[in-house]
Length: 281
Image 1 (cartoon, rainbow, N blue to C red):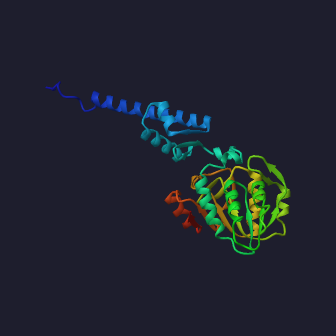
Image 2: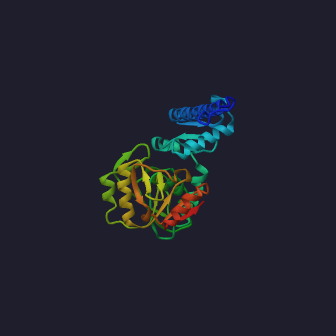
Image 3: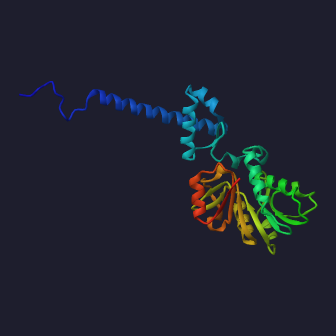
C-alpha cells in the first residue's frame, strides 16, 4: 500500500521551486539595474558612485560591484569614484581630456623623458600624454635634440625651447586631437630617421598590439614606426586590455610600454611574455 504522506521522487518540493524562482528574479533585477546603469553612463558620458547609489537606492558597495562587472565586459570604463562611457576619450576634444588621469600622465611622461639622450631625434605622437612629455622636455638639461611631431599642442609647447629643433608635419587637421594626418604628413616623414617614437594609443591588447579609433592616424603611425629605431608606447592603465578599430602597431613592433602602476598584473605579464619591456610609473 502506497504511503500518501511521502512526496514522489519526480516532484520538486514547493520550497525548492520558490527558492529557485526568487534567485532567478534576483538575477533579473541585477541585470536590469546594470543595463540601466550602462545606459545612464552612456548618455551622460560619466557618473559617480554616489549619484548611482542614490538613484538606484542601493549601497555604495553594490554599485562598485556593478561598475566592476560592467567594466570587465567593456561596457564602461571604471574610474576613481565612478565610471566613464566606454571609449569616451575618443569622442572628446583634447581640452576635455586634459585633466583625466592627469597624475598618471605626469608620472608616465617623467619616465618617458628619462630615455632621451643628447643629440637624439624623437617622434611625438598626438594626445594629452604627449603634451605632458613635451612639457617635461622643456626642462631637460640638454644642449640639442630634434623633435618630429604631427601634434599642434606638442609644437606649441616646444616652439620656444632653445634646445629643441622642431620639425612639424603638415596635413589634414583632426579637430578633436589637434593632430595633422593624411598623405601630406606621411610624405613629410620620407628621408627622416629617429631614435625613439613615443606612441600614444586608445587600446592595447597583448595579442594584437596598440590600436586607435582613427584610420588616418593609424596610417601615419605606421610610417613613424618605419623611421624609428625604437617604439615606446605610452598610455595610462585604463587603456590596457582594450581594443579598437585600427591597429597602430603590432605587439612585436613595440619595444617598450610606459604606463602607470594601476595596470592589471595579468596584462603586464602577457605583454612581457610577448617581449615588451613594461615600465610602471
